[in-house]
Image (cartoon, rainbow, N blue to C red):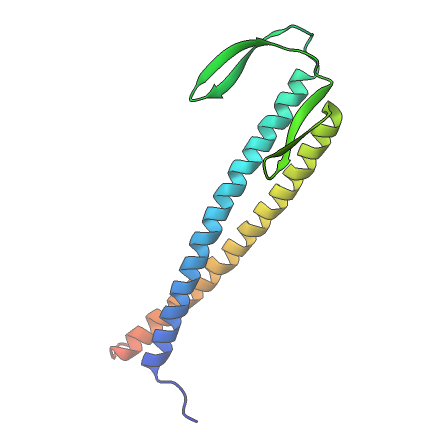
Length: 144
């Protein structure tokens, strides 16, 4: 069995490099989604913390999207409605909602850290492949 030629090795390395580039793009997209989710959860957490101590009938502005707000007043803040996924929401006590949000935030941040680590590993591997590809290319061109 003969060993692969330098050209075959270079082609294989370039192919694997392209696969790693695709993986990096996917992981970057996932990271952006996780960043957005963590920001949303942090805002929800902070808003609930701030609102649980507001007096009844306290005037507030309610964001409805696009930088638009409607005026409102606080009501009974003992119970809040929390989305639990798949367009399903449940009513729960503020403290339970805060625990739920904290648990979700913890999971999102752990996943985000994992994605960061995966990205770092792939980028390191890509650097190695780039160096090998450069060396093989130089050898094929007769440069030492």
